[in-house]
Length: 457
Image (cartoon, rainbow, N blue to C red):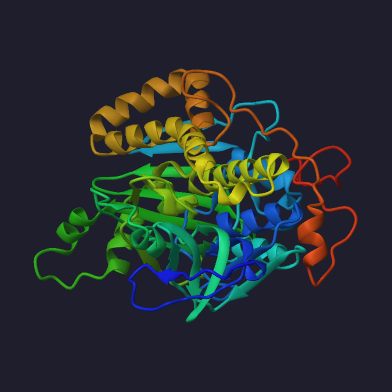
């Protein structure tokens, strides 16, 4: 085949020539939840995948650490829920002063009625390890994807640690502060700037660990508490960056640690639970919490997970929505390749996928913005919470929207249909590892069941 020249986005250097034989099917920048899950799904379907993560595992990451039922269902279809593990919880409990209201996850066909809390250092390492063991996936840590390769106004690969790597499709799964989103010209101002801080505590012996994700609405801040294995809990604080400055005072040297401690000590129920608790991780901070993109796709490129845009972590569905949109992308690619082996090079499918992604996220984002608005209006939030506490079915329905199982206006979020195993003989025969015969399915009858199909599994 004829060689073709690629260039970096900056035009500062030539990256080619490269031949078609040296091209991988999909190059993924970012080995977090979305990137690793996509690598597993595509590798199992016979595609060649290069997965690059700039950090090394295990590592901590600021996160609410609660996987909602929609996300657990994706892990079950991947047969990885048991491996990921975690502590079950059965809904979300809101606190405003002395007022408490809780919403249970609704029972929905195709989804568990529980979520799981798990440390990100364990979740990310588990999924990345599973990706690295998947035939067809080449997984790398400690590597930097620094720029994009362009050919005829289309993304044709990326530069990884100074080396150009060509791919039929580039997936940016590099987080809410995505560098590749910026390089592709898809960045938009995030608007409201919020700040997050979190740490982990091991509860004192005899202290009860409640089976709920709990959200405490304070004056100018919110606290988010997730139950975790080993009798631990995550405690995360969220606030506007401006509010944080006001807490610190003009020119004051008040530390983030002191502000955070003041937040949870001001919540009597949480302060009692943390009596005698041991802090078992360093305080982590992150800002901004939100990210925006002009579109979730560009020619030859897809933004995935938080890189495609994120509203706020206050409703706790970020990881779940990332897994659900990842599964949609994998399905779109696999079904397209069933019809046309050159599907990845035909960018006409990208807009269709992006519309589907936005449809999955729409109701979740509406409810998240509603909760953010209520957090800014505590008196109205208290009245709303009281009303929801008196209407458990409505409360449960709204919790179902944020957990990825219900639509806002009614109806169930449909679990994806089975994707049949595909051999892709051309790719498989070209692989040095020679993965022959059966290629594992993403889901479906005949696949080994995931035993983590109940809260105690």
